[in-house]
Amino acid sequence: MIIREFQRMDLFRVHEIEKETFTNPHEKNILQWLYDIGAGFLVAEEKNLILGYIIFSLKKENQGHIISIAVDRKFRNQSIGSNLLKTAINILKKFDTKIIYLEVESSKQVAINFYNRFGFKKNEVLKNYYGDGSDGISMHLKL
Image (cartoon, rainbow, N blue to C red; front, side, top):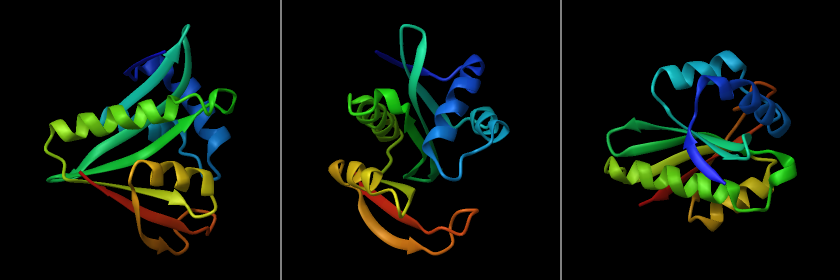
């Protein structure tokens, strides 16, 4: 498996993974826009198949933001998400990032546990955060 920068040709596959993973998935045009504005956008690939991706950005000075991370259901529990997150964290560190934020659906305990293993801590519950009215949880990691 390799981790590489997203390319436009990856958009359809990334969007497939996004839709199967999230209750409130980003539309393709939003994913493309994030790439176009310069967000960090990495994919995990093996044998020309995208297995997962991560999108992240510098939120403001010394602050990073994990926008989205997902792995195809068939390839979960193989350290793909961990490798993507570690790579993004290492890139953000190079920009002197001191803290990384993210939001996660409050009902996604597996995802919350995943972030906890990396040292992310809960900030607050975000009431009605998602388009369907579901709550989110804001988390942070101090570097």
